[in-house]
Length: 228
Image (cartoon, rainbow, N blue to C red; front, side):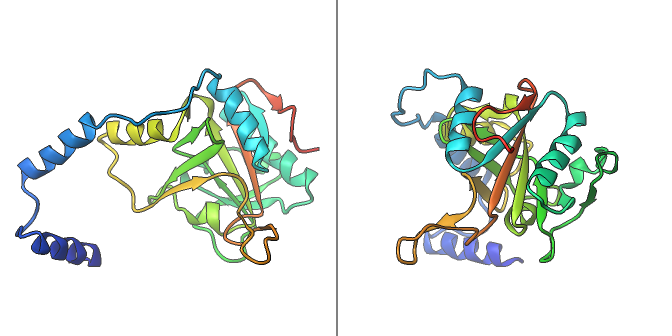
């Protein structure tokens, strides 16, 4: 029995319940979640992809666009070279077949380690309202690649850009084939804090840089905040 099971069993015991949850208990919870209405939301009459671009750039992320997965390696190489960053990285297993070597990059599909300076990930979806990336943890989507390296490069499919956070949770609940992950990460630009003397410091709890490669939304560099 795992530590998680121990904790949940203790909670059930405190509620006067014994054993594993019954099917009717799970059904009642699912019915409640499905019937629970969303709360009031601000007006969102903007186009999601354009809104995501603007909000992501305003948060200090940089952004490039490609029309197909085949263009991702060159977009990564251009960004790294333009910023004098190492041409080596770790990536999620799902990206191992991209032609990284053809773009002059040394990319390994493995978990991130302390010496790794660049991590390449995808994302489950993105939130247009806030310019936020949503990542789910799993063996195929290890969170370390987005947290440990100084530079995080995220590949975002334009058709997975949702209007708000409520839509992201609704999508996750609707995909019954995906069990809830151990962690859901919401990434809104580079890591920053102003805890010490109200001075903003980048990279305190994660990457100094977040670069987004927007897939299938046109092509070329974005107009504002693009890498030069």
